[in-house]
Every structure is written in C-alpha cells, then in structure tokens.
Image 1 (cartoon, protein in one colour):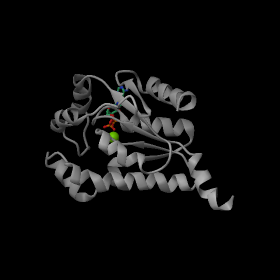
Image 2: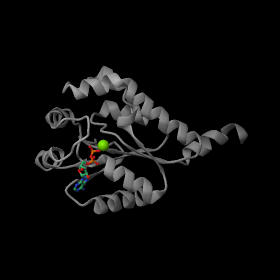
Image 3: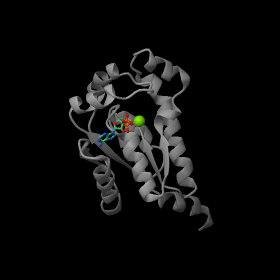
Image 4: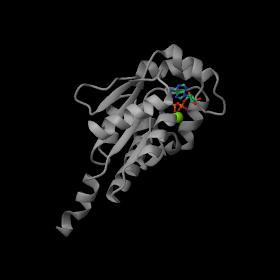
Length: 179
Ligand SMILES: Nc1ncnc2c1ncn2[C@@H]1O[C@H](COP(=O)(O)OP(=O)(O)O)[C@@H](O)[C@H]1O
Ligand SMILES: [Mg+2]
C-alpha cells in the first residue's frame, strides 16, 4: 500500500495542454482554465533556454533538436506536480505528434485542447500584439509544422474564433465530463 502510494497520488491528477500555433490563444485560455479549476498553470514558453529565444527573435524557426530538451523540461514539470498530487494546465504549442509524445511521457493522464482556426484570424491578432518574442513572420512556419490531433490522441479541438469565455467554458466542460 505505502509502496504504491506515490503512484496512486499521481494517477489521480489531470494534466491539460492547451496547444496551437502562436496567437491561437493558448496563454489566455490555459490561464483561464487553470483559474476556473484551481489547477497550477505554466507557460511552456518560459521553459525555453536563452538560445531558443535568441533563435526565434532572429526569425529562425526552432528545429526538433532545439525542442526536445525544452519539451522534456515541460514534461518533467508536469510529472513533478503529479507526484505531489497536483493537476496542471500548460500553454504549449505542441504542434507535432512527436512533441506531444514527449509531453505524454511526463505525468499520467495528459489531454490536449487544440485551439484551431484560420490563419487570417490569427494573423490579425498577432499584428496587434507587441512585447512578444514571436514575430508574425514565424506564423506560417508554425501552420506548416502543425499536425492536428489524431483520432487516437486524447484531446479536443475548439474553434479559436469563439470568445475566451466560450473557449474556457468549453474546455472546462470537456475536462469535467469527457477527460
Ligand atoms: N478567443 C479570443 N478572441 C479574441 N482575442 C483573443 C482570444 N484569445 C486570445 N486573444 C488575444 O489574442 C492574442 C494572442 O493570445 P495569446 O493567448 O497570447 O496566444 P498564444 O499564447 O497562443 O500565443 C492576445 O492579445 C489575446 O488577448
Ligand atoms: Mg502564449
């Protein structure tokens, strides 16, 4: 009993990743969902090493070698909270299946909320945003890299053109009823 205690605690937690390209609303929605559920929030962007930030600032897309260690750090952050019995919501682009596989290797029970929609709607938002290290010129490379959730992946796709309140409510509803 005591031997499996840690695993039991971690099995009872839930870990949501709000995914999508830059400007899709990940930070806004993930933060709102974490607030509503009282779960711990993290911004995957904050886990980037400086050399990744420098690359993105220079308009150079990150490659998989840049992203592997970064995603492993995000997965480790979720796993550490799971071991403490805490559930989490993370804002993370998680564009490719292989990236999501790394995140799924962290804690048990990882689910994805994909904020999806037309690139034009996202482009409009990004052009109005300042003080962020992701230039709008990288948006197309993100859209090209995006691999939507497969049928076998645990997650839900939401239309990012809804209001933040609608998206947060839809995500919370899915988490509480279907996750
Ligand atoms: N559903 C939405 N409708 C309208 N604007 C939104 C919505 N979600 C986010 N925004 C705005 O769009 C911009 C990008 O959102 P953000 O959450 O930073 O996206 P991401 O984290 O995916 O890059 C922000 O200015 C944010 O306030
Ligand atoms: Mg963000």
